Amino acid sequence: MRAAPWFICLGVMACSPGAEVDAGEGRDAGAGPDAGNSDGGGWLRLAPGTSWQWQLSGTIDTSVEAGVYDLDLFDAPQATIDALHAAGRKVICYFDTAYEPNRPDSAQLAPYRGNAVQGWPGQYWLDFRQSAVRTVMAARLDLAVSKRCDAVEPDDVDAIDNDPGFPLTGADQLDFCRFLAGEAHARSLGVGLKNDLAQVPQLVADFDFAVNEECFRYSECDALAPFIQAGKAVLQVEYTAGNLETKAAQICPQANALDFDTLIKHLDLDAPRRPCR
Image (cartoon, rainbow, N blue to C red):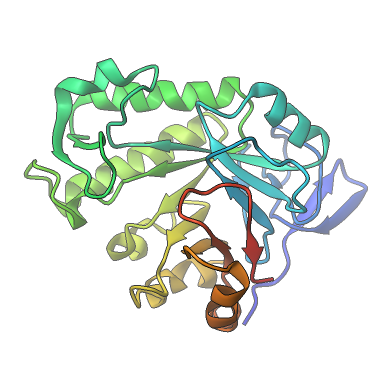
C-alpha cells in the first residue's frame, strides 16, 4: 500500500504532495514536481512517489521532468545546481566512500586503501574505521553544503559484503553508516542509504531514503521493504546495455507493485532514463 502523502509547504499558506515538512525552517530550494522539501530538522526527506533523475556522466540534462536530481558532488557545476534549484528541483550529491583516483582529496585517502573494488579500475576499499578517512568524508559533506546540495548519497558503504582487505565487522559498518548520517543531518543534509541491504533493519531509522542498484537482478528487493513501510522512498535502478523500454517492460510492473521509484538506466549513468512511474 502506498504511504500516505507527505507535503511540501511554502510558509504556512499552501501545501502540495511531495515530502514531509515539520514546523521550522530549512534550506528552501522551491517546490517542483514531486520535489522534496526540508523538514523542521533542516534536511530533505523523500517519500515513495518521488520523481528523480540520476546522472553521473556527460553534460547534465536539466530538462528532465524530475523533482530530484542525483549528481556527482565534485563534477556537478555550481551553475547547474543553482539552475535546478531555480526550477524548483532538489539536488542529491553523490560521493564514494571508497578510494577513487583523481578526486581533489584522493591523496589524503591513499594511505588507507585496501583491496581493489571489483569491476571499477583504480578504486579501492578504504578502512573507514580510521579517523583520517572520516575527516575527509566530513569535508565532503562540508563541500555538499557549500554547493547547496539538499542531500547526499554516499556510495560503497557495504564493504563487509565484499573483500575490503581489512577485518571490518558488521558493527564497524553500522558505526560508519551512522557516522555519515549523523554528520549529514548535523549539516542539514538529507542522506540516502546506498545498497547495504543486510543492515537495512538497523539503519532505516537513520536514513531519509534508500538508493539501490539492481535488486531485481539479484532477487534482493524484499530487503528494502522497511523503507517503504517507514514512508521513505526507495530510489531504485536497474541497468541495461540495450533498449530502455525493453528492460522497463520486464521490471516496471514488479517495481511499481513494491512502491519503488525505479529508473531503467545505462551503466555509465548518462542522461537517458526510463522511469517506471
